[in-house]
Image 1 (cartoon, rainbow, N blue to C red):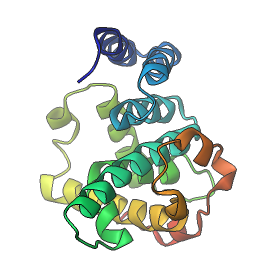
Image 2 (cartoon, rainbow, N blue to C red):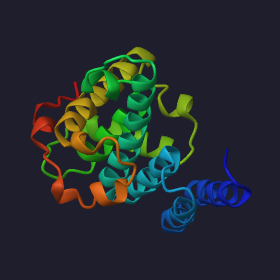
Image 3 (tube, rainbow, N blue to C red):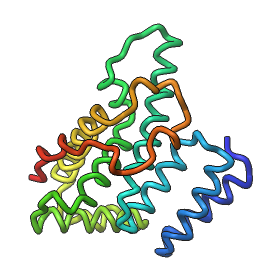
Length: 195
């Protein structure tokens, strides 16, 4: 449960994000993170505004969010005495895997993108700004759009398998674990195919 100040900062960030003030939105979300440094949703919100700005730091914040989500899943696994593979732990957060892959692929100038892929990226970008999802995707069938997002999630899975700090999964200090984009291995993304 959020305190009222965290809720206000999160709402302010969302309002600024919808207005296109991504720097202001990032400041509001980061201020909320100061008060709640292990909040997966807040890290994901910062990742979204970084993505919207075209800032590759979105990858760092996406990894922080994913690490915390996997940390929680691993904690639940330990309490229930189950053993889940790294892949199964990651699959507990498909939306975060997709967001991570969008940041790592869409913002990577080294990965060639077809005109159709660029159009898809532009629609995804507008959807993060709060535009109507249904209107944005009306010319792309729901089945096709879901298939594309599953490919993004699969790419995010492989990227996370390669880059998550598995030996530090017990730690919630993600700011110390995921610091800069250059620490990540992008090799698994070379196999991503839009269509």
